[in-house]
Amino acid sequence: LTGEREAWAQPRRLHPLSVLVNLSREGGRLLAVLIVVLVGGRSAGLGNLAELAAPVAAVGFGVLTWLRTTFQVEGEELRLTSGVVFRQIRTGRLDRVQAMDLNQPFAARLLGLAELRLQFAGGEHGEFRLASVRHAEATALRAHLLNRVTTTPRPTPPPDAETPPAEIPPSDALPGDEHVLFALSTRMFLGSMALSATVWAALLATVAALALGSRSLLPGGITTLLGGGSVLLGAAGFLYARAQRSYGFTLSTTNDDGALRLRHGLLNRFTHTVPVGRIQAVAIREPLLWRTAGWAQVRISVAGHADGGEDEEDRHAASMLLPVAPRDVALRIASRLLGTDLAAVTLRPVPDRAAARLGPWRRAHGYGYDDQIVVAAGGLFEHVRTAIRHDKIQSIMRTQGPWQRALSLSSVTLHATRGPVQITIAHQDADEAEAFVLSQAARACPHSSAPTPAQ
Amino acid sequence: VSNGAGRPVSIEDWQFVEGRSLATAERARLLVPVGILILLGVLNAGVLRWTLIAVAVAIPALTWYSLGRSARSWRFREREDDLLIEHGSLVRRQIVVPYGRMQFVDIKVGPVERSLGIATIQLHTASPKSGARIPGLLLEQAELLRDRLARRGEDRMARL
Image: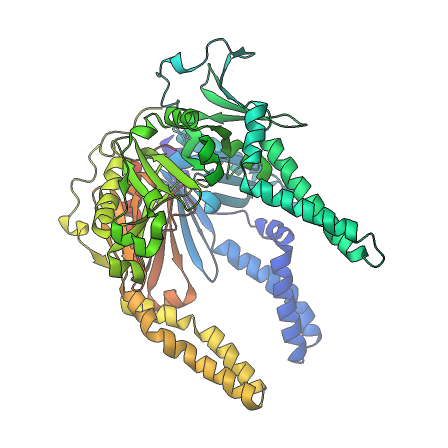
């Protein structure tokens, strides 16, 4: 095995014929090079020479790229060095590999080559592509890497696995050992629509469109009719999409793997499965009109859903944990997912001098934390409370603009994985915020000096 | 696992970037738009010509000082559990990235940067918003830092 390790630790080039494969795939960029060379050559009066030079330049660029691209598996890292004009050395840790694909595009297949794609946990730049190497080499490298990737991140077990099942209504067993945590009644669904400002705006737009439409039945009103019709369609589509997302909504939990099942749909029924350990951050929204009824909405950011190939609508649906629920139910379920009581975290209000920035709305703002989570509250008409577990915070940024500096205020953003939940602590005392930021890493990685837990 | 107990103490102090080179690199980025404006000015005539040339002169004149100031403002500290980066002159930013959250570290060198012997370190976490980077490092300084960060990341690996 050591011999194999050493063999892969040497910087290697891709297969020479990969130049041809990449030429066929990067047709667009190639065309730009060709046009520049052709136009440049023609205008310089070189004529036929230019036609000859263009493909030579294209192949030359490909060969240059090939010459300057190497990869190696050194220690626990995969290192990819590339770039003709901009040199880039990319390093990815093997224990962070999320997925490994071995693809054979048509051109590569003809030449007996294959490309290896490695997906590292890390947003949009997380993909390393080795295109292309011999098929056998790709297979061998994949096997070697799989051998080394001993600790691929897996969904962690739910943090609340030991929570006594007393909160779960016991009688609601569904097929597959599911327990219903919350089922949205039709009454509440209609109420939530009736108390929504956006729904009212859509209805008003519909009424206005109808009024315009009826007037346009007079001669010459055909353009108004078209305009009114499109508004009508838009509003109806919006209302339908909204009903589709929340009508008949049930949230249940599975007993075997602790995943959440989300079901909803007006005409079509949708089911989404969310592993609890993949939930990164939670937002509880209380729109102005819903507050009078004591209702709230819960949205979540889920790891992997952003990077995966799932479409926008799918992602949106999987992030809607509770479209509308009584406030205490929303808090209880959110607390259950976070593994600590959300309502018990006391919030520090913003200082009075922040009134210069927030006005009377500053009372809705604040932040707080315990040993498990950080909570940030804010919002103007709609109150939003966001929460994240310390171990899900990826990085922290504190900003201070000139206006804030004059007031000695500062805002803090906690970065989670991609998703609808944005956690911002706005306009807190600058010194306090700095102390919070500087001590957060210790809370975020409490076991930093301990050995990595076995998986 | 000892988390780098043998590390020299000095690393915990503030480290600074090559502010002068970084400022030059940032200012060099202006060459292209300024050049295009001047070219357009020369190709046009009358009031338009002088307006374009005035704008071409005004851009570097107005941004020269602030580019230099913000380039000099970059500094960072390798703390016990995290990397702390501070920069910005008008809007100040302070970014903390725990070592255990770093997915991978890139070194980027553009043509201007290469001629000045500097490089940019780009840190990637599982959040696309992190965007933490340190520009204006000497190339070997950047490579050493990259290796140190990668090593500490391994020691403090955390799961998603």
